Image: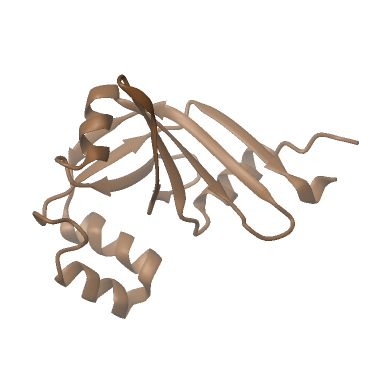
Length: 144
């Protein structure tokens, strides 16, 4: 049997697809935080997500300045891409970041309602957390 690993083009295309990612951030006082997250990725570029700077995710990523994210398909053929890298934290803009992210996951109408509400953040403020993937792990069972 050949390798189940994805090529560079395959892994980047898969990661750019619409998936709810599983975010992992280390904790010094226990196991890593692992939570589902909306994210965006363009092949060859940055992976990014939004969070409140005062949330558990926000505080942990600010301390660790690294994170990992896994995206997977939950139907046959099973596939996943997991990436790791250094975090960059910057201000989030409603029109450049929040609205496009909400449209990606909820469609235009649902995304606009989400953003015009509180955007999922209690204080209404978000930061953009990004990384250029440094390490990739992939499996594509359609290659069996």
